[in-house]
Image 1 (cartoon, rainbow over the protein chains, first blue to last red):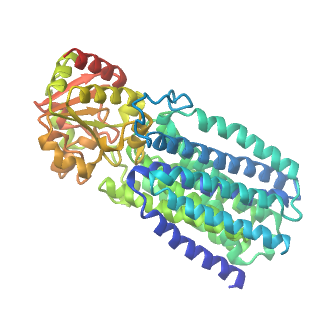
Image 2: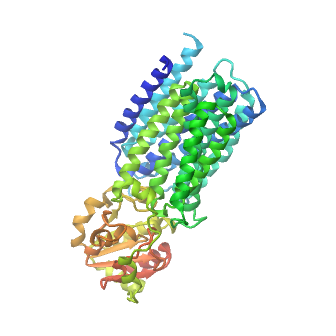
Image 3: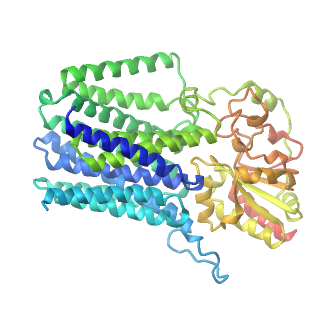
Length: 112
Length: 461
């Protein structure tokens, strides 16, 4: 086993503990946004797809890299936008009936 | 500071952002900021990657990203709240696919014969788990979108076929480790896609949320594996965070259903309607249906009404109407709250998200454990599009497949009103004896329609 691998493995093990500890405190009402949010975070594979695309030499590698960048970008933007929409709803009821006015919600809360 | 160090520092900052973001998701107050922080971290990581020395094909990368954004943003913006679960499944699937493709491309770009065995193992793991997650998520999407039957799909010799595919994959993995053959790696990719499909086929619609959570976790692990292959700390950290959190979330969800994860994944739950439910239910027992006026009057003169929402509320987009009914009742001095089952809908928290959309205040939402002690003192339990989560069989019938799943004790209320589209059993495919209970009144129809009629009836009462 090389030092590089050991280093990565250390990072892996520590990250696993961090992930477990951070998540264990999430209340159940936020489970759906959490799933969606963590879904967006694994979109970080976009970095990996850029790296393989950026070092592609053959046509096959270029094609695969291109596909990987598209898929990963979808994962990132889709994940974050969906999560934001969900969480926006939680926030929108935070100011609880400020002046008795019927909160108008023209942005996207209405019809979506 | 060299450029390489600066880039690595950016990755570190991004990773910290991801961790804080997950932390922030633990409170509604900071959750949105947390998500934005994760997005900023992601932008930083992407920006830093553009700055890498020797990164070629920048034009093509930008074009590919533009395509991804052009498809992803409208899809995510336009999707209805009811379709969120399948959207998460879809975005999860493409992430898994990306991880598999990244691993395989990196494998192609080097001479495989020079790779150390552990490097090959990382690639094989990334390809296997990533493509399994891709096809599994695609099938989960199809099930939730009801493009195919939501029932568990079983066929003869299912276990044997699964076993053969599993063994074949194991054989290919070992052979690839020895030979570093690219051709075999492609075959492995194909087999993993097949595995994803046959893995998901026997899982019933009610269990798909648990499955998506599990696949989300798998994708995280596939990303971590790609990170090992590319020697990228940020991929390993982010992938592992998601892998660990997804596992935990999956476990919490199966606990909420009162079942073990292996049971959910391998028991083809709901394919057989069990004797306990069906004989009683199909035995020609009658149900009592009411008019909106009857039920409106009942509601208007109650002291406490508990609304138990389920997937039917989501399908009908009836959350605003439900709130209207609650507000109308509150105005008449009736105490109203919502009893939220942890797995109501198709994802944990599904109901909370929907009702939040309709601006239902927090105080009116009660979790199952909080709501159940209140049920015996409740006049009417108004069940809107829920079924399995109020099925007393889960509590009383040891033979039932859902036995042991915690439920909302709607049957303890003095009256039970079901707003349902039909007598069809719920997602789990099990009959519900509560529908035939003498204290139960049914009102058939789309939840939004029936709720609107009830609002009108309550106003007149």
